[in-house]
Length: 292
Length: 287
Image (cartoon, rainbow over all chains, first blue to last red; front, side, top):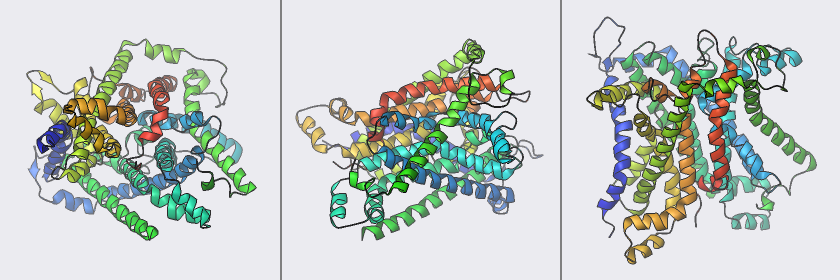
């Protein structure tokens, strides 16, 4: 009955669409990464350059700087999202009046388009009529200006990402919490386990699949962020918030350095996969430990 | 839920701390949205006064002007058509794909599962060029090309929505006991009948949440829409970005459009509220 032909038949439409929209462009990017191809350069068309683009990348301070900035951004944002998201999920997993209402509020930012998120945060922070710089100046005499101070801009894009994506983490952790079996908790309480022990040895291992999946989705998306940062700061001031997604964009579009931009995205993609893998093994090792 | 997991062991200052954190987090979540609505109700003149947190008047022009503009109406219609078609397509394809991945032992199905997910990892900028060439030169029949068509974006949005949908639905599919579809097969039901009568009703919360999230992601997408359309298939998000211009930004109208673009998502959110937590377990529920 279960002929594998039927199985492949069911998968085929998905594979065909992903091959055309995902694999084909990907292969082309690999191919272009080996060429020197710049519309504005004196050379016409593609010139084969072997590994030159990659050699250039390793010493490219701007690229490495943007990669470091992206890591700082993603690291702070995703970690904070998990801490806040877990707190919110715990409180939302209790029964209290107006629970559905609060759950809707804490889901709201997730539904807003990244470009509108950037626009909204720009409305909040723009020097002149934004309430954030206005009130910081008025009450704390703190001159906050994301157009002038790189540090302020970087902190702001991290806060914006936390604002936008904590709801997603909250929802998945809430789903994870509500699917935990009750028995291990009951026997732990009978055995006299304290809150911290219950958290580390029962809650966390039980939620590991959800935590891992959520972590991957968030990390992947944070490492390739473009829209909202572009709308809020445009990558500036200077290069303070030029995350790698924006950096590649600048290389490929205004500068039309296609070959180099392709090599850069491949290296970034490779880096994303390796990083995800390292974190995965680290968490998986910890999980084995705590089960023992 | 389980009372012994929290609450009971907490001291009074601890409890107050939890309330303070909770209120802070809620205000932090609400304030930017509140400000967006506030700005959308202000005229240019009001905006450049010192920013107050209350608003007594409503400058409707911010809403009326874009909503009566035929160009913006087209953007809105495009976004609706593209997001709805994409969500339907993604939910349908993901249903078939995850059923296959869950019920058949196909050669290399783990790698296929992983590969579909990597499609979401790539930084988008460099993929614009191959996609642009694909849309303008490769897929082309006579004068017709995929560039600047709604169908182009509908298909393209599968590249980030399908992996997510497959990821979500795979766990839910694995949670449906195989005995149920086997029993139906023994009774002589066809594959379509099994899927439609057995699987779809059981996976309904998962399918609903998959479709809604796909819809929201497609509705919200900007970069592809900005690069791969020019006139006919432009969407609301590209329209939003067009308000930031060198000559100055019309903040009031931009905020109004942000509010308008948020409304359909809010309606969906209210509709699937019950399922959203159930659907997001990524297969953590066993039995």
